[in-house]
Every structure is written in structure tokens, then in C-alpha cells.
Length: 397
Ligand code: MN
Ligand code: MN
Image 1 (cartoon, rainbow, N blue to C red):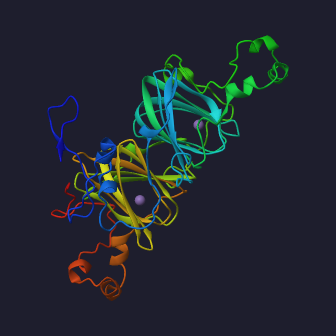
Image 2: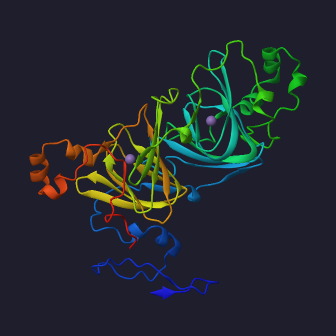
Image 3: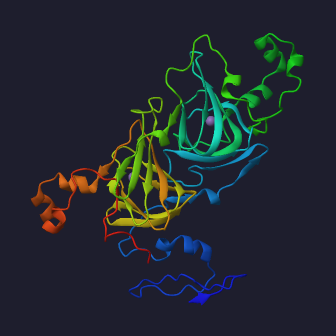
């Protein structure tokens, strides 16, 4: 069925819920064709999909934008994606000089810088401070309860924040302006030993994000603590880490073993080249929270008891995989797919289906699955997280 979108000379195919075997039938509307184009595996699921699997996809493009002088933010929490109880995500941008104000919260904060640069500040309970600049591909981690701030540098920035509690909201944190606004002025005066008039101009409510001048060089903002700096860095340069290169892409793993302060969040930055796939695997520690950075892909999640469901993702989407559920991710586009696998855990761990089978007695695998030497002899004892086997790659339908 061909039709012309408005203002276009180019006809395009309106997808229909009809499988190649003829199952299904046309959808004559009402319908959201743009949505259907983005979700080909929901409209025409693989025949292997069945059973009850909850929704495992949410796009930041479907969330409320919090617009402020100085930047914007939007978030995906259990309120948007109810299955995602372990982690919540915030996508934030700060203008040059824009500040996410001095604040703290009950949850730890893990972050990935998408573009641009920011200056981050924090202190620990022993009065040791941390002030650093972060750029593209850098991470930071603020332990739960520790105060911090983020300010956009000369070109501004955009980043992903991940919190180790799906119920978190960045709009419900403890802010310095909010506390000042809700403390009697005579108490502020007594606390700091200055006249009440020193507080004549304080904000009357929480500031959240505000516009300021871009800060000068790091050296110009140095503050010497008599107790020194925090013994563990709150920053990690993930892109500077040598990746594990495989036939289909690359993987960079970061957890408390190489980023010691990050005790509650572990992650992998995964690159899947066109035609390649993140192999069939699962994680024996916790749920997986995904953020898609570039490209497009599809994932089928296997939930046991005959249940499996396939979702399509693209840059800006969040995916989720419940604890121990089997899954893979195929690059379905013609550009490289980059995404983050994030876990509420002190370590990154996964079980490779291929490696498991390769390290199990042949007879067990052969007779369990009714497969022959063609498969058994190709099993890989060394894990390869992203695979591309020539002649067996993904081809768009
Ligand atoms: Mn924060
Ligand atoms: Mn995974």
C-alpha cells in the first residue's frame, strides 16, 4: 500500500500488520503511522514472540521537558517505565555557564557525558573536596548523600544521569537554595555568624538550574581544603579505556574494579557495527537499564515459560531487561549502534549462551537441543560480546 506523506513527492510504504506467511490483515486506521514505522517488531512480531512480557521501552522523546534559564532536563523513572525499579535516568543539557545548583540526594548519581564539557564539584564527609572538568565519554559518580554541582563550560554540554533507585526524581532533591528559603533568617544569622541582612537577596524557592557566566580555567577556581582532595576520584575517562575489540564491535566495561568509587553502578559501553549483534546472553546479578546513544536496533527479551517479546530502539530510547532474562541486540540500521548497559551493582557480569554451551559436555548439549556437530564444533569457549559472522549478519526486511 503506497501513499504520499504531505509535502512530499516521494511515496513510501505504509507498514501493515501482515506477516510474510499472510497472518494478520491491513490496519486502515485510525493509527499512528510514525509510531508503527519506529516499531516494526511490535507491528509484525517475529513468530517466536509470545506470552506475557511487560513493556521494556521508553523514549526520552515521550517525556516532559523541564525548561530553565541555563538548560533543560527530562527523566525516565518508574512513573514512566514501571518495570524499571532498580535505576532511574535523567537526560540533561546545560548552556555555556548554565548550572545545576548545589544539591544532594539519597541516591548515588552515575553520569555519562554525551557532548560538551562541564565542571563538577563535591566534598566528602571528611572535608576533602573534588573539583574537575569532564568531557565527552567521561563518567562521574557521586556517592549517595554527598553534595555536588554541575556547570556547563564554554560550549555547554549534554549528559545522561543514572540514579540507583527507579523511584528517584531529579525534581525532588535536596537543594541549597531550597534549604535557605525554608530556614528562619535568624537561624541562618546564628549559624554563619553574620547579620540577617546578609540573606536579604537569597532565592525564595528552589533554583534547580540557573544561568551563570562560564567559569574560568580550573586553576582559577581551585579551593584548597586543609584535608586535601577525596582519596578516590569521582571522575572516570571511559573512552580513554582500551576497548575489548570483537568481530562485530567493541565493549568497554566500567565498575568498582576500575572506577573504585562507583560501588553501586556498573556499566558497559557497547558498539555494534551494522549487521552485527550483541550476542545472546544474560546477567546473573541484576536488571539491565539501557540507553541508546546512536543508531537503531532491536532486542528480544526471553522471560521463560514460552514468553518472549521484541522491541525496537533508537538513539534517545531507554530499554530494560529484568534480572537474568535472556536477550540479544541486533543493529538494524546502516550506522554504528552505540548503547550503554547499566546495572545497580558493584560489578559488570554476564553469561554468554555460546560460552556456556562450549564449556558443557558435548553430549548434553547435542541431545538436549537435538543439534549436531555443525553447531557444536562452532561453539566459542572465549566470550565474544558483539559478533558478526560473515554470511550470517542481520539484513533489513
Ligand atoms: Mn545530583
Ligand atoms: Mn545485556
